[in-house]
Amino acid sequence: MNKLPSAGEDAWTLARHAHVVVYEALDGGELLTVYDCGAAQAPPSAQIVGHLVRTTADHETEQQPTGHIVKLREESVLREQSEGHYVIEPV
Image (cartoon, rainbow, N blue to C red):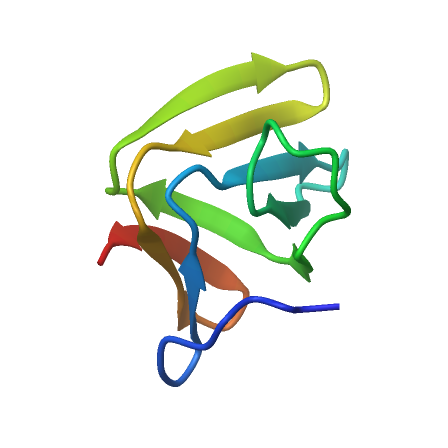
């Protein structure tokens, strides 16, 4: 289901106003769901099973009962730093 534009090997471009919803499972796993814009009522651009390790791009985090939402404020790159571990960095 990954419809994100490629930014190189194991990296994808995230829009300036993208939202990454991180669902935390009881077993410690995470599901990352990427929306191009939090205001648009559109289906997600990607769903990835893995852990969001850190976000260095300008963002705001909103805690939710089932995890948290990372609301980006600049164009960024979602990069797989190791198997199943992801980071969000500024472009």
